[in-house]
Length: 98
Image (cartoon, rainbow, N blue to C red):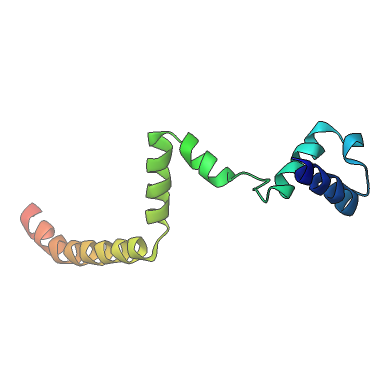
């Protein structure tokens, strides 16, 4: 405990050029975490992903697929097949309606 106290006081002098006891509680907490070699920040991406609802996750997947190259190629393929069928069926339609 004495060793940690000395490390904390030395760190506050080295990093902030202030006495540890003169620091606000938040800065003291950060200095303690640094002295223990722990993470100071948190993973906000993981927290955000955990807070998403089922619908929001589904919308993200649909948007990821809708902007992909596979979707674009499939869309043009379906469009080409559709346009070929329309050009083939149109003369049949004309013949049947006369």
